[in-house]
Image 1 (cartoon, rainbow, N blue to C red):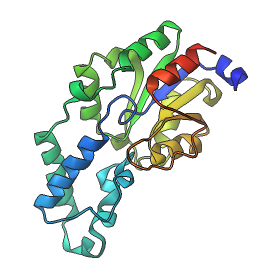
Image 2: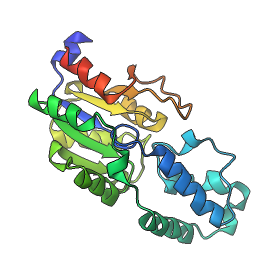
Image 3: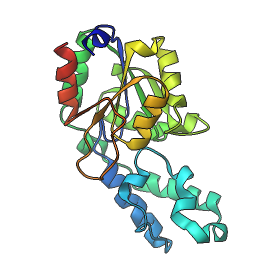
Image 4: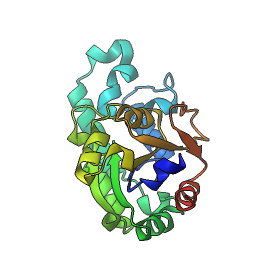
Length: 220
């Protein structure tokens, strides 16, 4: 492990659950929207939604009623609901993010961001917290045919950073995201889930916070 860390040059971050504490907000906003439509998601655990996007999960939400709904209209309605109820990113950023990025940047590491969120939300989150300039590459799941756990977003981030897989680290929290990183053949560290009961067993290491990860890298 120590030998690999000596070759580390770049870090690719997931956004939700890693940089921003957004998952509870997402779940509650999604539940409110669907309740207004008379649709329940009580049969699905919160962890089911983490790391993916709504387009992937309508079949699981609606089950036997899937054919009764106009999925395009439902998705469009949900997209509008999200615009009308935006996330308060300034309140949701983890307190250790900026300090961690700054310390790692000073050590010469380059950063990518690979999130399943829509690009407009990613850019707004970064802009509102003055984080845009830290990332050389910013990718959204909507830019790819398949979202996580498909590894495409991480493979593209590696390509755009112009680094070998052996020179990269992915920081994730969700089961889908961890699987995407593992399938991409890149080292994946996870921030330990203490809320949703996610299976994070495929991550090489788990840490309590981003700050713990930062300190571990700097102590190499």
